[in-house]
Length: 242
Picture (cartoon, rainbow, N blue to C red):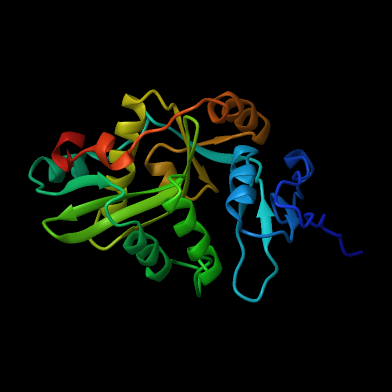
């Protein structure tokens, strides 16, 4: 018998279903419909929910169990990677080219994915979040060349990662390690990585029961943090991550 998903109300301020009611198969599927307005997206992330769908599908909302999380002080780079970084001229910055980062994330081929979930509507929504100071990018550069990066959403003292890419070997790892270095310095303890994969686990990601994740983020998203990310992040030499 088909399972009928809850449909979100037209009002973007309307509540999401309790994430604990999400389906087990497919894991974490919670609701459908609604929109990608700033209000709806911030409400979703603050409650441990995120959108994920492909062209031709309805707008789908997820809260998987378990949830993949990084402790910002717990990112691990291999000995080989650290040795490479000691000789590296790469630099890490934030919010210097959000649009190029999200476009690179959308265009980089990924194993097992025939296309991208970053639809034109998703791209427009996150660009709007960025313009309003809620979404941020991290850029890794070799001179003027963009060699890696990531983007995500910040609420309070919590960062919700969305996607990352490498245009050179190790570019996304350096973006993640650089971001977590700064977040730890700012006393932001966690970074949400959404869904587990082997690559994230090698970098130190942990799988948390959804209930633990929801309890952990509640006080973090309730805090007030407002600053210019580009200025506060500054320029971080990649070799400092070695």
